[in-house]
Image (cartoon, rainbow, N blue to C red):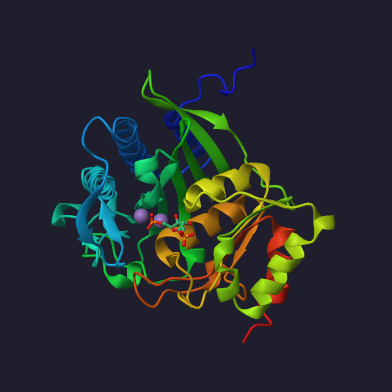
Length: 334
Ligand code: AHG
Ligand code: MN
Ligand code: MN
């Protein structure tokens, strides 16, 4: 039987080999990725036994987004923060679950990187055993190393990201990492506790016959968005839908197999629902490096600059040709 693993290449080994091609690069980025991978493994282990360890269900609280907080949201957020705090490479973390930026202790002011995180994407799917994930983005800080990081380090265009990725907890656990070296996937072997390279050089198909959209909101969409959805529904186009309600699960499927994901503006949420820093920027960075595209229906996502930490944005993301077709219709909207 053919093995899905590219023989023996662990995430660590891959990172070392990649950096070896870049003399002068320090090991700090490798350390950062090791910390993120560790958090991913810890969250994966908890997700797998959530029902046994009393981690299903809500905490009874709402977060800064006004959404109900699940116990696993809290666990994932704390785990991610701790993993980064102990590494010494990160000077600031901003999280979907936190009102304010988390500044790592003074001894880590020398950290080079700022990390954005949606610790648990797809919270509403936790209790039904459906796929969930952790999404992250990495900026290199703008302020001087050795000083306290400021909002200037994170309120900036998505274009400034130096890496982004996610860990997806599905039928298996996979870590996807996008950098200037492309997009690569690593599957967790839980028996060994290591991520192994399993999806080298991911490129997303430019067109497809799949769209991912919460179609129940159709009557709330602006006219250009409805016009695009009408086109997708034309029988001659041959499209089908896939939508689980976990952005990163829908995105991952489309990244590998082709497809366009849309969470447009609705009457209820004129800015859409998804968060620019925690969801849209990282997925846009990944898709572009895999040959795809992402817009808010009018502008490229990575050209946007958030006004606040928790800004939302409409998101249209997937194969290049499909995103262009959608954007042509949606950009005519007032
Ligand atoms: P989160 O669990 O981090 O709050 O994100 C949930 C998001 C996203 O993952 C998904 O695409 C979207 O909510 C689904 O929203 P609808 O239920 O409105 O379709
Ligand atoms: Mn999310
Ligand atoms: Mn979340």
